[in-house]
Image (cartoon, rainbow, N blue to C red; front, side):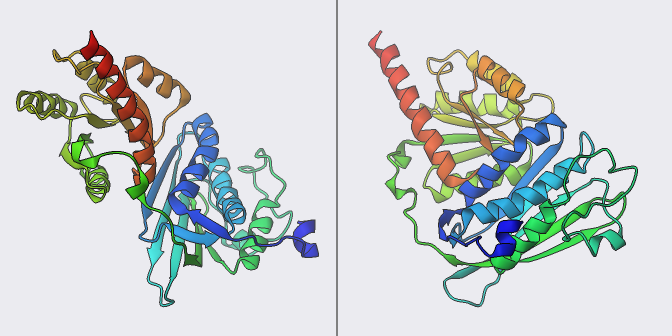
Length: 324
């Protein structure tokens, strides 16, 4: 606060790949979310993924708000972090909207008026046991003003809170996925997710990259499709598998895939798609035969990096099997 008030805080802009920033924020806040067994849902609806901004300051704004959402929500609560894009009339710029909403204890209308004042905390029996200095929102507000960002809040006692951050940023040129070494013509992926929208999103990401993908909505259907494609001599060389599904979840589906009577059943890469993965879940998934995790919604570049690593490893193992 003293640096802000003295004017020594400077904005240092640089190219930022927005999906990377969002994933970093998710990774940072996930430990706190997991500790309270809350559910964090991250959704993105953006066209301009590459922008120019002060990454550190934007991180501070969003993490301060998310930290409060976690802090003032009960164990098992729900928090949503949505990044969208609004129409922008300035050529070469993108208007981004960040919405952070929780189902926590909420705030009174009287307190909202002073929420951005230093050392301000609402006095009630509900929040008296929650630690904090009352500086987080004041720092956020000051950074917002320095960056020419707008911030608003909606809340009601016992009904949660919603913070909205809107900023207009210059687009950045960036090298795309064409620099990756994957031969997309050799790829055939099976996407398995009981949520149709999530499955179609993953398929669209793959399609945009030129990768052939089929979709199904249950573990049972996945096993059938794997068998059919193997019979056609057009086997899948990757499975994107939802972590939580009714009847047969990702763990059980993985176990069943690994037991299929075919040479590559033990080495076909299986990537878990999950909104929340606790540390113990990750360890369990590796034990049953999953190879990696991707956060929902699936993002093109992280998918590519994961594919490169896993496909290379699978090819190396297949060569070893063929050599035997």
